[in-house]
Image (cartoon, rainbow, N blue to C red; front, side, top):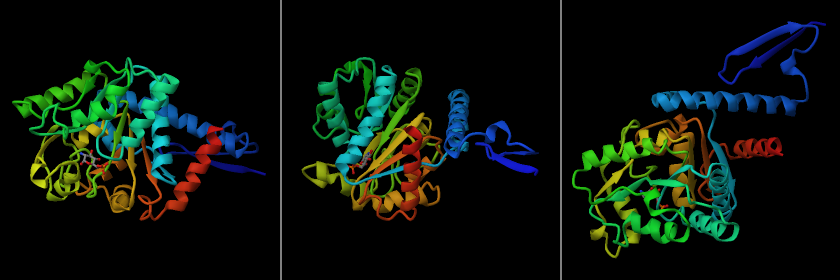
Length: 325
Ligand code: GLP
């Protein structure tokens, strides 16, 4: 009997074989075959990354694997999962570069990282961090500033050297040259290994409001009235919410080696379904993550409630778990 086998390679090209016996790449059971495919894909991704580090735009053109969607029961278990991903990177690469976010979403993750530092001595001595954004006009001592938030909720409780932490300066005198300098510092640190992201109700990441260019870099951004309203909960009075922020761009975020998008609550469900299952559009800047080759999305049930393909994501996760065993 003549066998005809097709191998779909990770770059979508096909390898056709015909003969009496299975070719080498067909030998073994389905699981080990899948494992070999995953290995091949990992090798290919590391190759693409090294090209991408010299040619950043290459990252934006290739969607090499779908987003990994992890749906946990509640914010607590979702935060645990996210903290696990960050901790294992810090353990594997003690001098890694983390991109960090503010807002209520990452608070639980930061508490878990602090606990891991205190109980398991997770070591941040060589870690470098870059935050996504800062309100214009607020200094580091202002309790509403993102620098203050990061000190209070993470940096003061772990052993990261202060000089390794970077939050954009909301009181820079010349924002154009400051923004260029911020991008340069990220590059000089070797680029961001893992970017943690929350998402705004309108689907923005960092402060890249709807309409931001998907290739945008660090710059000043005017906040929408929806964002001002959303973020008023952190201020005494909505009048005190700054209307301007300095934020890294969508293009800056897409250059991170890995992105971790986290969202909890039904108020994020629409933004999540648009970001994950909608078209890639500057009107929902989180949707640009579909162009990134390595994105993990961690949600609680409520934030996942509008996703159409929940059952499929669960099956994919189950396969991941089997393959990781
Ligand atoms: C702000 C921040 C974003 C954050 C968003 C959601 O707009 N610039 O980085 O993701 O708020 O915040 P929360 O997690 O509080 O919902």
